[in-house]
Amino acid sequence: MDIYLLCLIVGGGLLALSLLGGHHGDLSGHGLDHGMDTDHPDAGDLASWFSLRALVSFAAFFGLAGVVGGLAGLSEAGRLVVALVTGLAVGGLTAFAFRLARSRGEVSGAAGRLVG
Image (cartoon, rainbow, N blue to C red; front, top):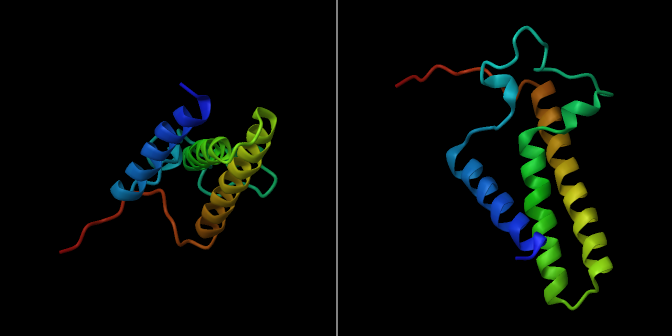
């Protein structure tokens, strides 16, 4: 099995489940912070860019670009470059978007109260 196809299946499946399930996938909201301030990372904090959501987005789009590159007839080196650029761009954009939303208070990792 091709590594790109494997990444597409696993990453795409997890991405689809997270979109359908509505769970955000960061560890800070699941009771695992243990006194660490993980809700609002500093702008220079490299580790905050590696959330589960960003890694799943990277894997899904890395695999998608690799599979499409293979179907388009790119060489192995070309497929790798296209897959890496696409995966890093989408993973970085995902991490940035959710960091921005979290800093504005639009996304919370805390458990909400259901009304109704």
